Image (cartoon, rainbow, N blue to C red; front, side, top):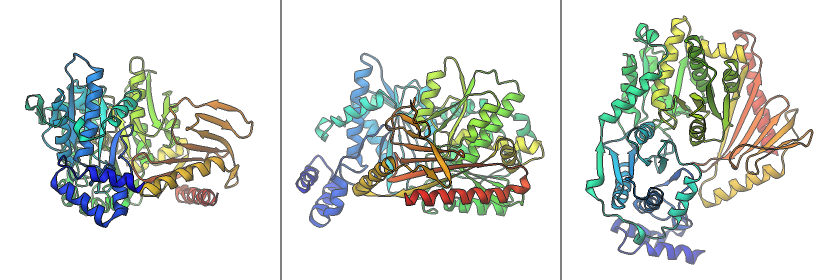
Length: 575
């Protein structure tokens, strides 16, 4: 193993690599074998969505060479798929360190392979890249981002001609081509300037004009256009597009968090640029309190996820989790479309298997089917594509703060989500209610659903092995009873088998295979265990349900459900 690592690392001392890279590799060889092993112990995997990893030297790091080789593999696949056709690609990037540089590397390689490239002139949200692929009729798209990961990470996501992240068979075929690129000698790196086209505000305008067609309550916006909305881009790509979109929707009192308004890959004001984390929302909440605002919105670095804060019945700001925001969006859109006569019986919604079952209940109440898919928005996009000739997609979401309204983008879209959340707020205001009142209305009508996510981080190569061992353990030692409730169904998405523990009956799961284990209890509690596809984590999702008969009971029922989740967690950890 040591000899293989040294051989790999030594190959990076050749003249094919820049001086700074060679110097760093030589230092690791001489002084830090442990880090050398992390950098060269394996190749950075080009997964079903692309690349994501820590930036640095080596085959297991994000750098210009791993990006170039991945892009060459993509170019080879494109040229084999679209022979004798003009091929074009759209490329966007966020505010992370090296994002613009990696976008340039990818641009150069694609153009060197005879592929036209539409490169955004500065950082843009990921959903706009998806839109651009469709709008410009490209065969593929690339966005350089690591989403909400810490600042040392970057990534490379690939999209197909429908504007969605790659899915079978293209994902596996591209991976196969990438794996054939073993060294830089196989990479064409001299750009063809004639094939490189820079794009700017013209695509922004098309995107926002299309986004405005989603609006369901323009009169409510006109009446309450002065609603105070605090927005933070968390130093990312949402800095221009979200305020611009909100303004074009008709909102004219947008307060941008000054300390977080400038793009900065170091994300200096937060520990992690993730709106799922309470700490990341701190400055936005302070700004909202000082301005007596009604709504707080914050997007992650590539503006595909959004965190939301609203005022409760005591006038205090509370953070919504991803399931709650999704529930409000589903309820608002279905309710409003129904009132406007825009539900014809041919609409559908989508959620992931780890997202609250409350979305099923809301959708069913409007006679609208809600499809379940694996975790990852590419699967939501796949469902849209599969049904777009016969059914109309209206809204979808996942618990990890990603939502999509309408189908002109085929990935989660925080820009349109911000606009529709703000519109839901003024729709509530029109009824002399708040978004908190709407949330309580949902709980009273459908039941009090409460969820919790527990993530365990295990970094490095040994961490990956430990996570795999944990998954094996839970499969082989599945409990029969948790917190006094029998385990009724075990769904193993790795084997595609759903087993009823009581009757011993087995059925086949109609979803792609994935390393996910889901337990459904007799009391309707749901526990899902899966390794993260983008971070060195294993994730445990817990969902429980109770009855809420009055808003006065909220605190009491909430405490009971929290206790229930805590008890389930204790038993799972003991197993």
